[in-house]
Image (cartoon, rainbow, N blue to C red; front, side):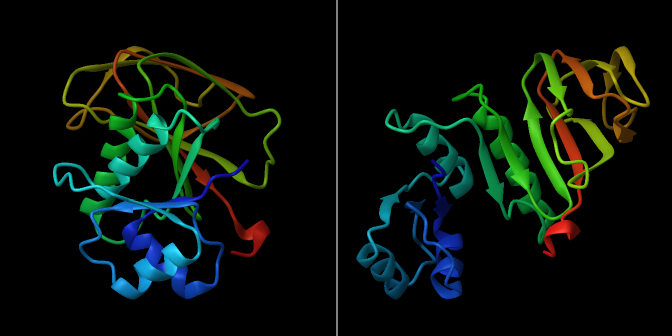
Length: 204
């Protein structure tokens, strides 16, 4: 089953577009109108207020999903995590990083050009054999995010690495390319893994 959850700011947009409403909305509701809140409640949307000002609504929403024992899910796909203000994009990446505290399952940011996740430290194998080739290009990036030394090994890429430190001010593996049906990443710290997507086949 696909569960639709959204933050309070996204709920205002959904209520005005005619798209399917979410199953749950969370946030501090400091910027949502009473009309929207009533509309959601009248349409059986669960509303959870979160007053924590030290975390973003997205971070809090991910934690709510991870804490719900009654849900079964394999991955989280976040729509709208890119674009607009750069600091908002960085906050979305920080939400991916913080999700490692609550789950080992993948959490993705998705838009018309990017599919981005935060790899856990350790060894990760990703298989591309059964993915629709028009949806993904071979372009990708592997980018350090934490303020600690990040040692990375890569296999299956155009530019592989062997226990090499990635850091801003030095080397980061942007504009890399996937050259195998299966890639391997080994890292001692969490690592951004981003793929270029191509949605023209869906006319969006």
